[in-house]
Image (cartoon, rainbow, N blue to C red):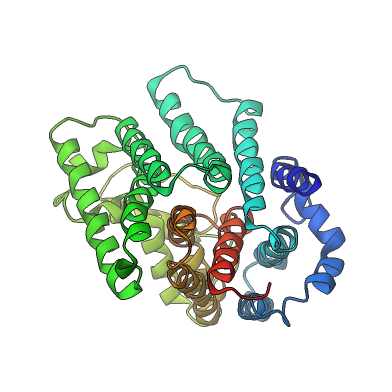
Length: 398
């Protein structure tokens, strides 16, 4: 009971923040205080399950530190924020692993704490639900992610069959897409559908078989969504993006329209590929923000996301843009390692397939299409659950 409460309160503690080399939460201050003790206790570099990921984290830390020496136009205090994200993410992983290694289900309480944090963050903010736009924002960025996090507790502890859980996720996914949040809708619908197949047919668990099925299934889901939008069956959310596309059945066009930051980040990376621009570096003359409007093929005022800093809405591409090619390769290696561990765990017992697929989809999306802060908040929960299910599947000593 103590561990359950600790995990819940720890994730909830990210809500309480103050300024110290950027924004720091109570939970991160706690990690800093126990950091050396945590590393000494877990010994991640000697641990079979954690060794590779720990080495990659260490490489990323060193690369960021070295690259900062070449960022003469960017204050070191800015680079320190990027380095702090890496350190906090690593300590977050160790904390969750230490408290959940004996029972991976305990991570459900960490996800529940994250759900409470998301909801309270909205309740304590100056937010309104007075019009359709505000209601959609609340649904997409508060209610849907909080539901996803809270459902992990249900997935890990409920005694229902995998089939029932999968059907619940399919129905929730369909509901979310209809109500205007296609991303979170796909997070529920696709894992639910694939779980029904993979859990019941062992021949589908080989990654060489399941990967093409997931790609075909994902594209089929996208085509169905597009068809319903074009025919006026779905009108909520960012349907205007689909309606304005030259070829709406090509998801690349939607990606360019909806996630232009990643393309601007790539251009920024190509201009300084060796050591990058630095964390929170200034966008010179708002060049890359203007570039985003070209990708979107829109005219009008350039809107800045983070004051006048470079647009950064991809953890992987952001690593390359801020700290160069070595950081990009290292971050991509972390991504590949975790996804590989996920595919290697598809032979898990049926009741583990759905939570595994859900956090893998969430991990994939966040690594490619979420801001750097996600690397210290959401990503560690996904990574630790995947690693612990991998260990459970392979019967490793953890």
